[in-house]
Image (cartoon, rainbow, N blue to C red; front, side, top):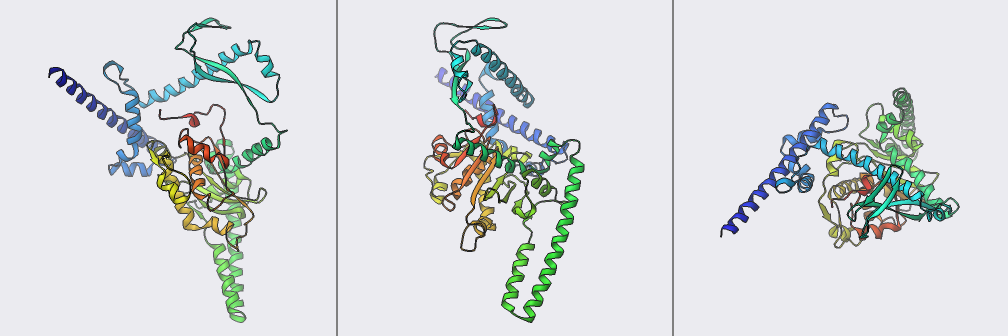
Length: 452
């Protein structure tokens, strides 16, 4: 009885400690987001976080990440790690340096091996390094410029391997590279003025002012032209064919209707978006720059050169996006698959990605932009291909959105740039490989993340 009571007390204390750790990490995450929002004057979002936090919504936002951090850092007794968010950030910096050092040492070692020459001589292969655990019982000695080093069986080492490269001489490889390069411009354009100032830190202000002023003058001329055309159609309706004139007036009203949502007076987002993508104002079918917890900025443009209707989805940029990123608990896709015609039985998706996808899909259905452009007998671009592109969080949204729209648009293509690691289950990732291409920049951390 004494031992049972002792175990019961220890279990109760351990449970209480975990709950305290989760609450501690919730408060830390909430405090960090509030400080960043206020210190940047809400330039990168945060208003919704501050308002919702005041209403007691901390658990809804930080519950997943607080549980993950508490499970990772919390242990019993001496195993507990007393860390703060700055320690975690510093840990990522140190990890980056350690990985770079390991890769450099492994490359030096591999280049000294005699069997590497055959791999390097083949122009269609590339020498790469994969981290692995040494399973050999014998110690492995590695000769480095700094001296001798011995790895035990529990140490990590890098093994050399080769893989085929995409080459320009192969038509399929060239088409893949060309597609990735082309639509990278569209996904970068979704970051609008933030990326513009990153590219032009000194002259960005003057460049933007000139572009915005030019766009404003062009917009005024367009509005005057539309007013003149409406007056002409009204006279036509009164003097001759009433039905024909009324139809023309409706067409002008449709053209004059605002199709850009959430931009400022100077059209700052629009000007920088067009500058990045290399498109004209007439190529914009719809753009939404409003941002919230699940409201994700995106735009729809007409790429006439590639005969494509492009839906570009922005990745993580604001503090609200960061909160969505840490909604880690997986959401089942059974009901979604049944509704939109894909096999989601037993499959899961990142909870935050799914919430954003549902909002974006609902917004697309509300405006019916894609249907007007691509479907029906009166569609102006019926021979165009629908392409969905996105980066980071936007890439994850793009994949799920593609699966939801593929029954309606069978020739749909999705191009992802550095999507979050492990945001969908393995089977689903393999099944969508026929219409999804993914590009990852070197050793980018985000596509390699996992809750495990």
